[in-house]
Image 1 (cartoon, rainbow, N blue to C red):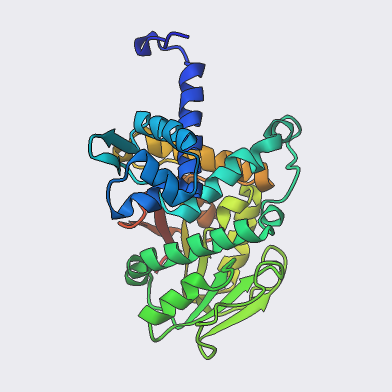
Image 2 (image 1 turned 30 degrees about the horizontal axis):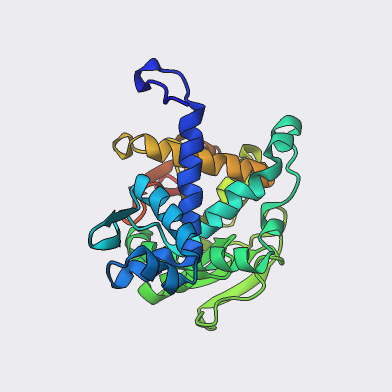
Length: 324
């Protein structure tokens, strides 16, 4: 089949199929250990097949695909890596999402009702463990930027904080902080083992309906809002605002539906993929920060500022408080 002209402006299904084939071949390379085997240096196809325990003809065919898509180079020196995939956990996690979790996405879109809960789907041990490692790693990468940007606070309520990844990292960088991690019972099964017991405590409940307490200097909503519809976010803002001290603030960490223009079209594509995944999982979605700021204003938190994060250009901090 001839490739369509790029200038035609017509969607090219064959290019989509080729892209899917390249992605699937990369996942096969990750699972088989191709990229790990090549870390020490070039190998012949035969040597690579022996190292990963594969059939030489099959390995050669896979190498040809990975060369075509720019992952590998094959020349007189052997097979070498040109472009490494992302972290193994992330690549395998997203492959499962796209090819397993999206399996009945047509029905979800047709009916408007997710067929399964995303977090229930993540009860599979391997998938859940990968996500746990990804979230813990992301918390470390962002911790310095976050700790520097957050306002002074002695008491912090971390809504939807899971196993306490951000709470632990914040306490390491802010010795004056004490954090209560509040999440649903099925999520907050246990805090991280390295959570300091005198500074990080857990509370199980439904943060959409249960009492959030009062007098908090800071409420964190980190990677929570994309799991909820707009009406749920607005109600959560209203309730969280009531739980603050008079000078307290809410800090949001999430993806912005409108990414910085300088990140190019790939950023928009990623956010669209993430948005559809959230819809498939639990009718959530990626929100615009302009909408979040407006909803915070409805809750009385009209003083807002946005902090961009160097370690994650697609995520931002949105910090909101009452007028002084």
